[in-house]
Image 1: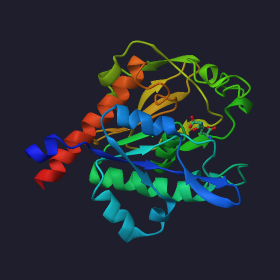
Image 2: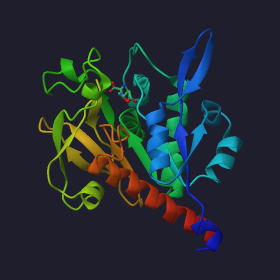
Image 3: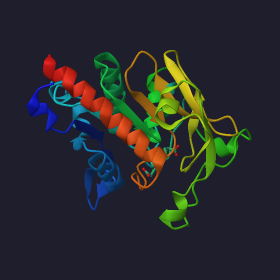
Length: 256
Ligand SMILES: N[C@@H](CCC(=O)NCCCC(=O)O)C(=O)O
């Protein structure tokens, strides 16, 4: 690895979300995702939705990135992406389009990929899986939504346990003992496609983490490790593992 690179930090593309800013459409990301990437020793790079419709610009951006973070979002994927019809109240077409292209590129380029909540769901769908659109109406699962009336500290507090699958990516990073995680989601994995390894489940059987097989680091988690990311050992292990994979990718890239 070149000396120049040793003192550099990996660049991690962070997807943005469409949000109305007064009378203007905007693209935003919550600060806690950026803070988690910086605290883990990487440089966050905003990924604007226009990259989803401009292949040359996307290729130019991907050539400079060492990893991709797909954040959570209050919006939901459009159901046609996983073979369903009907509407979702709050969607983000530009995010869907870019995220699916980023996941495909990360798979092809073996670029490290870390999906959180909606990002996890995008990884499930991109790899041929489908989603439960309203977990609370299925009668099959515990409550996985947060109470938005509560203070954030309580919304992002541990809500249920997960059991990492022995021998998986998550178990390698965090051990295979039961862990407690927060839960702020209405939708969840209904099925997973080929090439996906289930990495953890909740006590009610809901898939809570996946990885892509034959990929050095492509991990999606349904919970929120970016929340107070350095104070929680599991969160720290996930972000440190992701950034370490980005360092490895960057080193390979610099060697050509
Ligand atoms: N809308 C989807 C995904 C939920 C999600 O990402 N929630 C987090 C929003 C706030 C944050 O990013 O911390 C669903 O409801 O399943």
